[in-house]
Length: 117
Image (cartoon, rainbow, N blue to C red; front, side, top):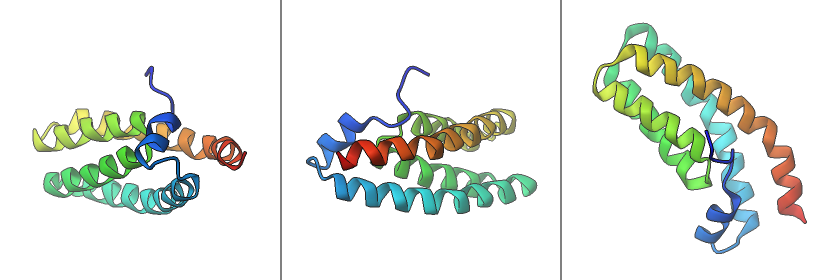
């Protein structure tokens, strides 16, 4: 993926340079997403496509709000796969999203430092 983990320039432009707001949004995202990922894991065990689509849609929106374009793209693919009832594509994208979210979490210390300066 050619996109950065977090497109700071884009998201700061959209929120009029409010770094405090961005940090708050990131904190909410980091708190909310693990719960949503667990919900997706549970929905995968019963292959509940409507729940999978809704959960992917919610995370996609949140990722878009904070400029996490790579996560947005993965959750978009997951949402589409759930709507098409394509379980292998959903699972593949979910596995990639788990790795991407872990990278995102690891990258946040550098982002906090950059936003504090």
